[in-house]
Length: 376
Image (cartoon, rainbow, N blue to C red; front, side, top):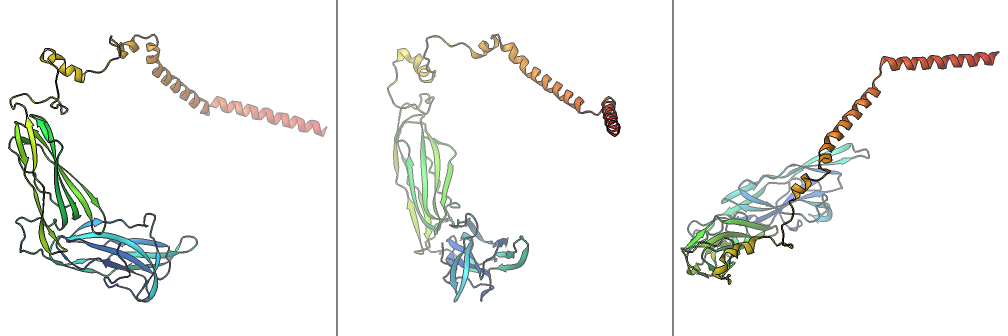
């Protein structure tokens, strides 16, 4: 994380007031070179609420969000001194910016709102603050020594490696070629070099995966996996693959290369291809037992000499199968009957009202008789 106390972009409301300040790692960079920008909140006194109203616009940049340590549960305030005055400072936003074109680029300010509330949660005072615009001067990549069709995302420092998962195969057996690009730069947008075509091999659609490690600078790797199928015997060489990139630290172009890889293919190109990827140049049973080669590999292991009974037939012929079929409709009927009885008991019919009235009359007569006898 950058140090917010060092020089950065000028602030919009410094001088003893609350404000937002943006601190870039640099204000002059090449196309495709990483610029790390961080936005900080400066407070003269503690606030109760913070809300981002408008995030900074970063048109003309490829943007990668970077994590902020300590902000997992909200803003993390620390006391710092800026221009001779003490502030409570909290990091708000952290991003890696990769310029996509040359020329002056402007990052529109981040705008936020801070407020204080009373004991009951009612807002007492609200203030709207924002950072100053951030001006970035983007230099074009040098023309001298630039390779043809150069990928402008290949700016940084990269290495290249290629591996085969097997050095010897038989005809029809697949092998995986992995081409790995790793280093520092815009790995996500970087276009890896093409896998060369090999005579006598069938290549399938490549699979591309990548991993980005957020940091200063951003690093990571991108892997291209290609499945190759050997179609004829012989000794083949996967040629060297190259990736041209621009090193902004040195201001020069460089090339990362792989080493050539040799692979041997044995077998008859007219023979049928193996039925499984597990087929390998191992000893096979003799020709007299050829009919048992596949069954021994694929059939399930049994612990008994006889086949087990079919479970479906056993269940169907059991004595309690009919009761099992009758259980769902019986349970549904009981549930329906219980519901209807409950509804009838809850209904206020004329007969029930008559019963209640008779009980009340009898109770009133008994009370009146008791009172009369008490008076006599």
